[in-house]
Length: 199
Image (cartoon, rainbow, N blue to C red; front, side, top):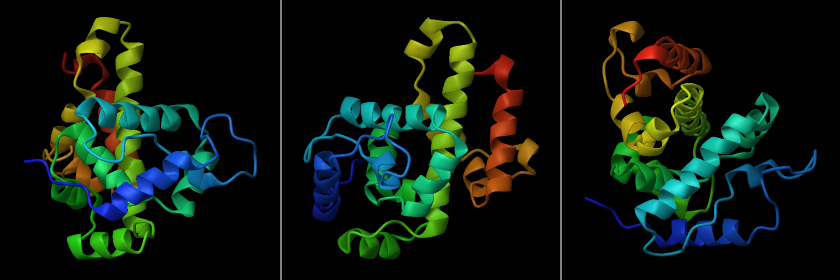
């Protein structure tokens, strides 16, 4: 069931939409918060629009050097990223909060104050995007454009994040997003799956 986006999140997206910076090709020393800028309608965004915004962010992760990703997370991950992930994957907002490890109370407080997510949750959002970026890169390297076009990247990643994997000691990929070592372990599992990615 789709949950409505709060007014604070809508306002934040509108603010980011009107922000003058553009994440791609920005000059050194510019505001790292522009990494998170997405253009999306204030109300009633379609799944296609959410997915376009999500794909844009995943593309930035693929294209950006590590220092840009570091700076973007350090500058603060906006709360509306929860809505972008939820809208793109079809997951409930509360499920995305569980994946990134933020309580509803904390999320609402941060959202209403127009403050970024807590640091740990911000790192997990970046970890989620990095997993999606790794999967997209592996699909692109497979040389089968039809597979990439027809593949539900967002849905697959959201479902896979909740699977207990023997390669992760029975933990889920979502649990492993808690720290950089866990994030690397999740990316390594995906790399080893290279030949057996679902069609």
